[in-house]
Image 1 (cartoon, rainbow, N blue to C red):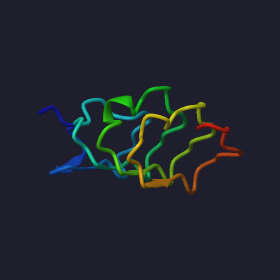
Image 2 (image 1 turned 90 degrees about the vertical axis):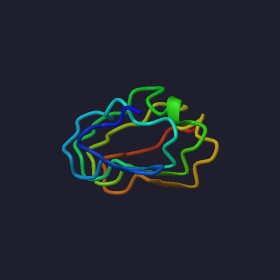
Image 3 (image 1 turned 135 degrees about the horizontal axis):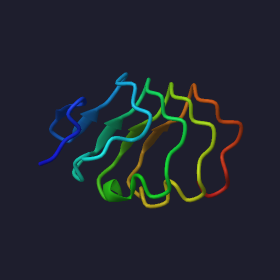
Length: 98
């Protein structure tokens, strides 16, 4: 199973906290249930970036980044998502349907 080399992977957890990523790393396992992308340098999230994780993802931490905007429908396919942390970013608003 391919995994992002700089992230800590344990079972269904992928921790990419504080790795200075400017974009969401490739090769996040599709079985990931909990994904931490906190304390990075993310400024935007491309539409569909989380679509391959749609089935299992329950926790997504995007706090402490530099996100300025979110695309409409970005989280639409994450039907099992229970916790989304967008705190400490530069978001001025969140579009309806994001």
